[in-house]
Image (cartoon, rainbow, N blue to C red):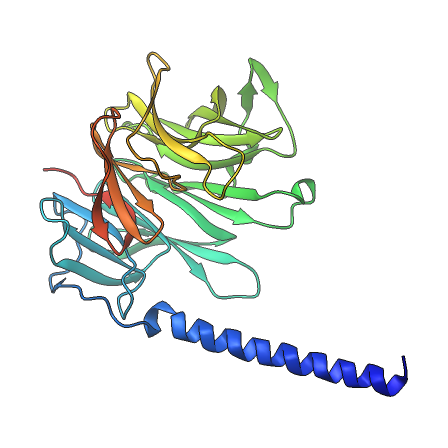
Length: 334
């Protein structure tokens, strides 16, 4: 091939790549949430407060100026007017009249900010962290916050994902930016490995214990950990993103039922006394850490930016609760 022909092909390739980039940019702008037609939503002008009982709090995903902000609706009327804040988050959780916001930040590498909030969504504490936002959870009393991000660059995990899970105790001002160094017992033996990853933390009502998922050796396990003693023990295999019921007796979790597909999980509920599992009446694969509205009811996000609910005992049928919403949680009942 002649030098002139090589140069011509190089120029042509550059033009095609440039054109593709322009087309992609125009498409991205056309489909960006803030550029889409605003959703037809009724807005309640009252402020979002986390100390008002009987509210469902979530990330608003309706196209328009309120995309991504923390919003709320009455639990008794989830389809009614929603209150919207100015706080934008990718994941949000509430507990004990406090809130936890984890939001992606712009930069050359994936990173995020963790913000602990009071009942009026006023900032109490802030941390800068690395990775892509995945999970966020507050303890029931609002004292302890946990979050998970996906990260890249771990040499030991080049062909798979890696996580960073942090925990912060506000009253003790104690921060663990990565809990994978916690001593772990697996199969009755102390377990140490470079591929250990934790995610999906959920706290007991007294905040003294937490449950989480640990991945190691290509398998996932439910672990129970003592917060103050800083010890963890694996309890059961094939458990992801545990969420403890308000009474502390059951755990809702993602169970992998297939090796195929983008969402190979089904939500099950584990009785901690008997270790019996129950599949909930939701046929869709769910990639979410579900929340509990009460001891009988689960709430979770589904593709299509909708929040759905189902009975924890597997009865009945699942149903849509809130349109244009994700990352749901609930304020206290009274």
